[in-house]
Amino acid sequence: MAKSEEPEKPGRIKQLRMIAQIIKQANPKGMPLVFLSAVGTLAVVVVIGLVTDYLWYSLFIGILAAFTVGLVVFGQLAQRAQYSILHGQTGAAAAVLQGMRGNWQVTPAIAVNRDQDLVHLVVGHPGVVLVSEGPGNRVGKMLAAEKKRVARVVLGIEIYDIQCGDGEGQVPLGKLQRHLMKLPRNLKKPAVNEVKDRLRSLPRNMPLPKGPMPKGARIPRGPKMR
Image (cartoon, rainbow, N blue to C red):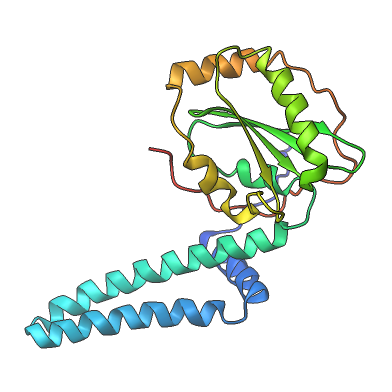
């Protein structure tokens, strides 16, 4: 039998080059900043080594520290660049939510209106989180309706509603993951799985938006909720 042809995944070095190009397009000063942060870290550690007469030891530590700092800055700039790519696209919040680490279940677009405003459903340790995309004056009623509908299925479970956007009282796209991570841990893992099972019976009350959901941009995963 002929082997099914699958697109080859790019290697690690090629992936880093692709991400570097994204950073360069979003911020021309991004890659020089990565280089300067690494070199600056190495210089500081070497100077400390010269002062304390531990030059060779500090050089070794400095290289490791410079590599680590460079990677951290690189990752932060990559995340910002990819957020800028997603910003304004239909389903951008869903793409960010699906990049979260930990025991989270994301169901995109459980509600859509004629203006292509969306409500996404997230289940995790805080309970149930409804996340909207769109202007506050339009999504408020959508969130209230979905909150009432979900509450019938998950009685006694905390339900949060979050508006993602750039308006007053809304959570910017770049801070959405962090905002959810700060929510209180109301449920343990078995209870989270039980809520997921309950919500599987919840039908979509609206069709998916006509435009394509963003799939190409990969959001770096956030830290796991402790």
